[in-house]
Image (cartoon, rainbow, N blue to C red; front, side, top):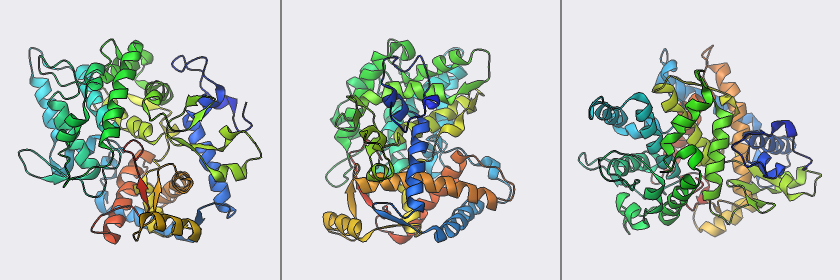
Length: 449
């Protein structure tokens, strides 16, 4: 067993395959995300990062700025209305209550309407597909909403598109009856052309990774059908509702760690297969990192891997909400989830001067891009180090923000929503108003960011 693995952190879940290598189980866990990032943080404290310099003197300024954004938008007495970071509010961009309007229509349909359990299934169906489509769209893609003519971009634009496609039965093979849902066969049959049309992609409206996104959903369809014990013979994501209610029994509480095991078992097989493997097993959004290798005395390459599982965590944050809002369930072990290591959260620290690229790495990125901002592949060592430091710094920033909130208690999910993610986006728009891009550009395949 790897010298960096703590056996007590590995869950002996009956969802995870019993014959899975212990190193793999560990690297698929939430605990491993923080454990490995902590090692990177220690390297930063010692000035031993490979690609970045840490400027700790800028952290208080960053905390002041993020806190000011939270207070500006929710102060002085609306902090309890901050939603957790999740997909729900993206559907309501432009102040349009699309989810509320849709669920009200569901409630009114047919004899007896749609009860809360079925309503939750449908929301899980929608959120599941929408989150997995929500990698970076690029700086040029826009979606014009039918009827209103309003234009949306980035995460909110992808959310609105996915809602329209969901309502049009684009993700289900069962077209009869007109019930919006998602099922395995519908996803298996989804063509790149259908996704291109739905997203209004064209030469003049380009989007990153359309083929990869369509391929990801087709792979999801296969995996859903292969896990009928949870998702039923139809391979419906919404059947997670029934599974989690069954695990809870008479309790009003659901366990994030059980939920996590289910999602990892489902999703690990769908990610591109040319990524990191350990003992022949793919481990998804987890990457070799030179900083870990330098910090470790181990020669085992598995000890040098930094896991993130960003899209799965983003999905987890998003799926938690319907269970809470519609079914009144509460989650335990939610603190096991981490910040999201993506370009808005990470860009905040670069734009505010907390992190800066070392000259050699910066020059390499600029040479690749040929422009004013450095460009790297998603699996580049510099990007992996940046993402690990994003986790480290948000944990530090979270504590500093709470100190500045004068007794107001906020969860990490609320700080991500109203604080770091929003602040990262605002600073990017101020500094690069034409593109609103990250200060470091990532060549994404549409399945990571």
